[in-house]
Picture (cartoon, rainbow, N blue to C red):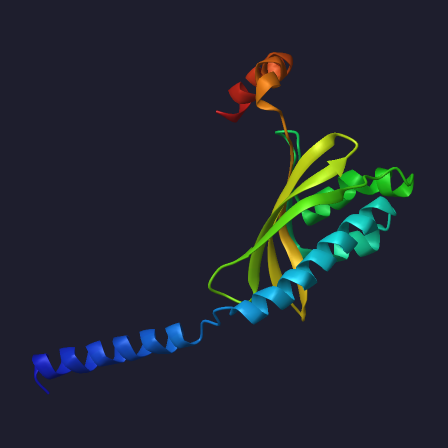
Length: 176
């Protein structure tokens, strides 16, 4: 076999394997998106109710085993086990958090097993934003990453920055 033939055969193999991989992508259609948007919304509502009811087992079952929780404080970046340990006293004392969705957006990319969301929440901290990444595992949607953020009206940002500046200036130094 000459070099030209070998290169052509190799090229065909590479192109064929690329086509096979591309064909395996399950791009969600509108019907799938509509059905799964409802399922995800129900799951997120149930997730929030589990927290409000201090049902730790149910709440943490909504997370994947490798989930990440990012809280409102710049130091709050936990894996699932660390977040569960940190929050255990709140669940034990039945002094957890109650979040109710005010507005929610759910998005899908080019795969049927990944979605992401953002929502405005009514909380004890007033309006917060929850956002995250969801994966479809074992026939159910699970939270792989959750980010909770407080919202700050633009008119008072300078005041809020002044309040938190000294603490976060120190934190910035340690993070560099």
